[in-house]
Image 1 (tube, rainbow, N blue to C red):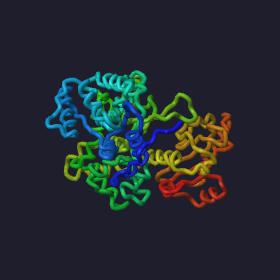
Image 2 (cartoon, rainbow, N blue to C red):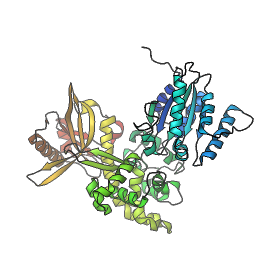
Image 3 (cartoon, helix red, strand yellow):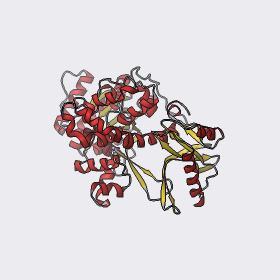
Image 4 (cartoon, helix red, strand yellow):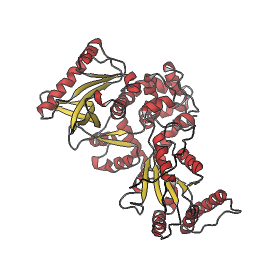
Length: 497
């Protein structure tokens, strides 16, 4: 069986990273074969989806259309004008129905495979709910036609994650029709450090704890204002995210407002604030919000579908999960900005807010964020030999200690493959952003390993690991040279394996 051939289009020189995404998109757009093909491209706002797709349309000589929040009539008028501009028609096409519009779009690809990008597709579907069904029918009719005269490569793009996530679900008309489902993620923490020009890993981690890996936040939202160095970080916070004149200041509110499924926004803000405050279980979130657990199950589900919350299973306790905020800027907003928003409108307000909120930022934002970076390092950057096997699942866990009548939180739990064996416990680790770690931390991990072994869990392959933002004592380094513990500092996190 031969694989479809496709042209290898050069990635634009001004496109940072995104090598894998560009490869997948160009393979889809230029692959040989008759009949229409469908791709769905999604991702949270500001990740660069539009730039990717505009570049793809330009590189392939395709058609790009960005939908607007408009009625069906206006949307058809805008689309007719865009197609006329693309084809050089003397006047805009007058489209009365979506059947007419789809016929016109498919005609663009009557002679050769042609890229057809419909950006912000949820806007069109909101004003024309039947559009996915009409598109499914149009694809089916032309795909089944004996002559296969149409070759459109249709890409539907959108940032409304709840809608886009359901576009290819089993109940959707487009289920089974797409040959590509691409989610454009944020830049990972190493890419983000390079993108922001941070060669100091401590500064890079702090910046990432505020703005994450969203590309637009550097260019459009702070006007390329980057911290000049570690000593400039506090001033950078005051002149950007705490400055009401900068777009990034109100971005967290916009991210919620732009999601159509978030109706009771005050409740959703309260849920996110509870998670930002360290409440990670549904019961803890409900208690902080002042609702019953059953009352917040729907908001939690919606926030997950929107990509604003993630949920992680506990490595050691069945039926227990931990909720975490997916977008660092939202965590920063709810921990630092929202509780003191009234002060920011006053002269000197940013300085006062940061003076009061800096400790909260370091403890409730940076600390948990550093733990997340450590888990990402294990998943994507660590050499498999570091833990004696290939990491497959990296999460957190809670280990009961019946004798002490307490439980121990484990920040980094690594399960993986050793030879043919899957699911082996490779490592348990503790992460401390602000503490020099010593042998006592290793002793704690050894104690937890004893508790796990007493429960019948195989710990024979398990390596204790300490992750620190400020380093380790000489005694802990000696233990590491004896192979008793894996040590990961910021330098290794950002540049080592």
